[in-house]
Length: 317
Image 1 (cartoon, helix red, strand yellow):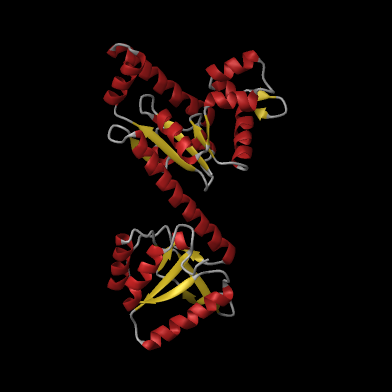
Image 2: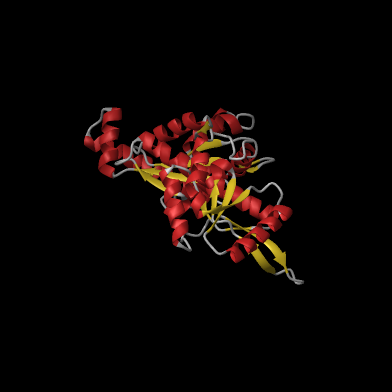
């Protein structure tokens, strides 16, 4: 997985990226790292200098590689294929814009806050700090615009924008890690749905169909058990043309326990139908862990889940 970090100067973006790298134990890669890592064998000292100083130089032809930008993009794609990494700057949010596994973060702060930080960092006057920020903002924007034809300030490039005027570095890291975990889970469910031809619903809001589901969700929250509402639908019967005629959508999924739960407060007639669907799911999708839960069993079941240690499923495996 790749996390890209775009930041304004004075926004603590570099500090957030470094802390995130330490938290996740992922490699942190900056523009200077890229030049050493990907261009060392194909450039001389003058060419390296130009890559450091000129955005337009990335569009220069490099024999056997297309342009420097082409080599940069391919090198990063190759890297992403073998490891996770945090990429800071250099238009990485544009390079990985179409990668569903990538997560794009923008770190910003109000100009006054940025000015104060720059003054403190460089021990300069207000006017000097304004000049430093103006040059940095101009160069950052020009690089992405020149090399990739994109506006780095366009919020549509990012999954999340964090304002460090009101957030600490640690709070930003916590938010990004939580988003990363959710992003990975969503991608896993989507991939599994494509593989087994089920239907995922994670893009939809959690609108409970009946009060018992809302009650169960509140209880899960009380016990601090992570849950997803109806994340997948399992088709179990089709007509002659291949249209789905019967499907099973478990009410809840508990990621920690890799378990789907279907609640029921209905009559025996509907319970029998649910059991029939459940039997078909187990036949068609072996390895899927699904349980039907009666309302009277809510608390006892959750007590059992709560007592299970990290990494151990409710069935004891």
